Length: 443
Image 1: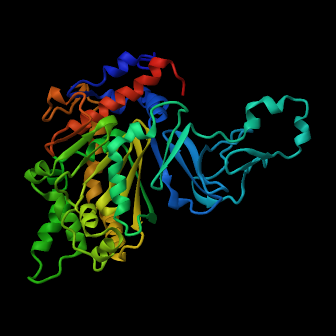
Image 2: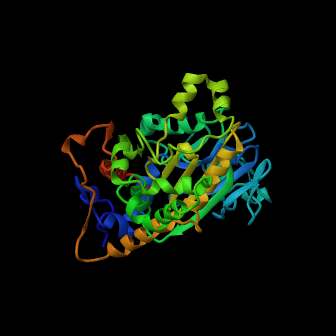
Image 3: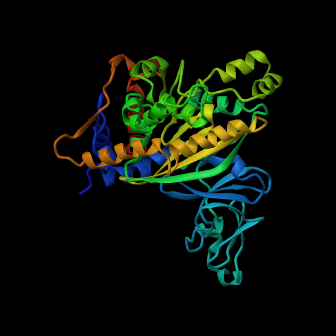
């Protein structure tokens, strides 16, 4: 029997001021509703324009549980189409990148479509004469997703044709993307270094929660980052500090460091750690970078850009951006207990190669399937996924530093160990999960 479907009150009851019911993480029914409601009514990251630089270039991926294609149309615009032939439903393009030329051709019956989705041709088309084909759904070609927005080359879509606007959904949180792009002397990013994919046997929201959980690094990462620091401390005096140690060491800063660095909480579940300081603040300078930034922006503006060292920015529902190190992690939900993590790295166009080297090393050491730090987190996620099936308790606590005055605030800075951002994410979760249900909207 369905407990939550078509029951917005039951869904809303899963989230209290300081607690989240375990069904949010373990229920298959709740997961199905997330695909139907949450990932349909929010703006979800699709990809980056540099992945499809030329007309005909495409990238096959998923938004929620929906297969989509991001493609560069012949006029240079970017389209996002459902990856489903209008004929028999065959996926028209494989996952990953490629170039389709001027049209997509279905590998099953050779129906072809322009890169904006319009039906181009059908073999033996006379067979459809006098059948009413021109009035049926198939005649309209590949369906486009509800709405697409390209912001500074980051491509987002909202599957539902109607809903919250891009500007209203993200608001001032877009400043993190602005800062990451502005770190390029040319104001451009390019995806570089491919993508690292890593399967996690846990709920996708556990990964999102973890991005602003600042009470775990010095505990969970003691065995990895802590060990690296201890080994480095035994090096002979005068030994150059390796880049790996520079990247590892901040993970085991004390609680006070994370308290003082602060968290900013925006509306609609977005927020970031690292308001006044972050683990990315003390990296060694790259020769010539400052000079190129000053030449591009002027000294005052360059200093303003580079002094912004935000740690993790969460864009609800499912991405995290690290502007100072130019990485983006996408948490792709596969099941209530299964998440595919994609870790993407970006080149600052016009910046020294050392910065890309640092980005790639960070991704490899922290986010890769062969990483050191990432496995600490993965073990905690999987233990939590298993532990939440316990009958001993029904609620997850997110009450650290809770204050009832936080309700309704849309742009606030607070103690860096406050769990306000996690609470804000779950309040947004309730809003977007129930808004469509209240209107009786179908997926």
